[in-house]
Length: 86
Image (tube, rainbow, N blue to C red):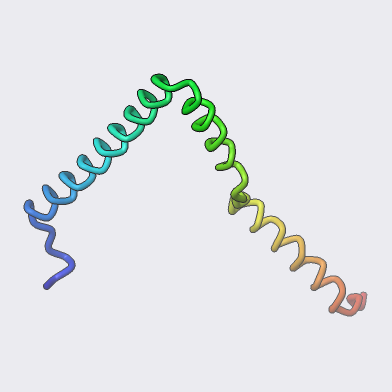
């Protein structure tokens, strides 16, 4: 099967899958909110679970890593190289 050929059927299947996933996620979120509103204790449970998401580390942006690598590379060059003869 050629990877270059992209048929209309493939496109429609991908769009249908994406649409299904979005609708399912929205439906789940709406159900959670309705459940939490109906039961005050459940609202506290939901509110207690969402802050736990912040425990996962968020990776720093790539440009900070690149700048740090450039700085380290300059330091290594300065440490390794002999002073230039003038």
